[in-house]
Length: 210
Ligand code: GDP
Image (cartoon, rainbow, N blue to C red):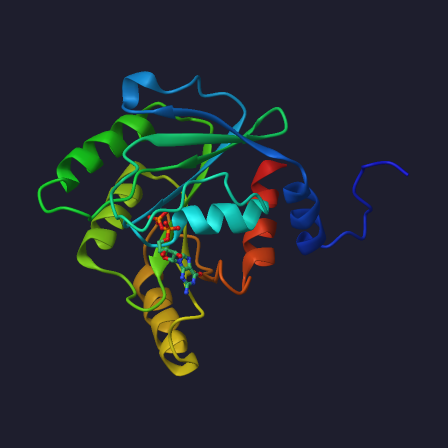
């Protein structure tokens, strides 16, 4: 048996195989001057504080303590780098929206990060499935469109809303990004709690690694 993918392997299987490898924490960067070299392939997770970013990273990797889950919004202010294998990095960006007046600092940090990352393949922007897009999420979409950085929306906590409400939020978000130039058209619906959508997100990420 080799580790090589069969020609018949599905994207879902490839995603599962990709995430079966161990992930490790590499470093936290407090600002754009402290970033590690832009090598290999990188993806990033962004979202409002408390959107469920740490929980999703832990659920995706199956490593409970990898990202710190916190009941206190706005605790993590660093860009946290995680690695899988030799050349694949996942960056957990600090949550935004936790304090009025702090968003300009967040946007400055984001622009500093984006400027130096030619290896960044996609930003996964996490949105709470109960709330949909808020004004500060839309500001991030504008920023990513202007910077021409590919991004994809991931709804989190999909176990929380009623099915009808979830369908309405998914449809509204899908419509809101339809004409945005850098947006991936597919909105992924996930729950770290129940595991909904994790296979699809793993598959999307694994496809970016090849
Ligand atoms: P972060 O600030 O974006 O990293 O968010 P956390 O991962 O720390 O989660 C914030 C809160 O939401 C915690 O109380 C989590 O237990 C809760 N949470 C995260 N993901 C889910 C989910 O999929 N379903 C539910 N019901 N709660 C979640």
